[in-house]
Image (cartoon, rainbow, N blue to C red; front, side):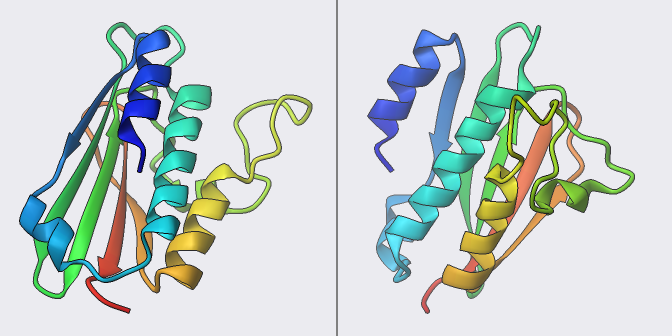
Length: 142
């Protein structure tokens, strides 16, 4: 992921980006980086478009965590969050919280498609005190 490019885009919008990962973990992964990059870029775009509104000090944190035979990528923002009564609806194609003429509603469904179909992983939402946390579990090797 070209984090410097995204850092610049986010800084221009007043959004802080924090990426937390271990060099050891990065060396241990043997899955295609392209799919991970695509998924993370779509998550960033989704946060920019939907999350922040009137949030003071908006921020995004991406953490890579080593868990046995998987890597957990936690993507968190401190935005407005989602309805957690049925959170997985955000992964359904064409679902959007915005009017149809403003958005298509494919961003998060494409994230799920990339993670499940290309990377053979899983994606789900977890409870967060503020904003939204999307978890991506990936095998360390395909």
